[in-house]
Image (cartoon, rainbow over all chains, first blue to last red; front, side, top):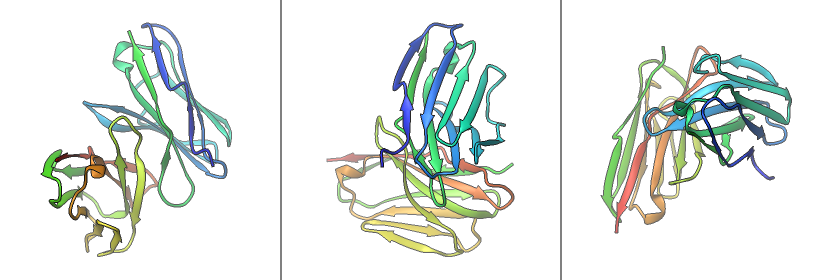
Length: 111
Length: 111
């Protein structure tokens, strides 16, 4: 099993640009989570899906952030427009019964 | 809302010494999970505790869930350099499926 796959691994962009992060969960897992991690704020849950349906998006910072899960094997997190304060590591995780399995993360730098 | 407090924030120990991190919730929990994140890596699921007073062991790691299901601890016996990293607890409340991560305890081992 390849585990959770995220792309890109690193993204450097300029303020105002659109950023799309991608995630492929572990096959068979029915829950998917998007997290943001920074030194100051720690690990924050942004949104999670169950069976492709968004269940709780209360962690999404503002309208500039949006997430979709068009099918069981793919999800995106989009930031438009991006701002320097969005710089962080974004993790995707999936789960089935017990525990969440994290991807390697996308390190986003917004200049 | 549900909050999860984790202490200490940082811990420096001499190699071979024991280490303990504590996780406390303001509300009764459905279950609690523990994760380890190596520097530059992603969180890795270690274990889930469900039952009141439950104790589980993984080699040198001992996990406990409090009788009231509001607190938990992770104890490492005779630390090794491979134990370096940040240890997170993640709590799931009784009312919903949302999992809240603690801020983590960063463990540094002195050789």
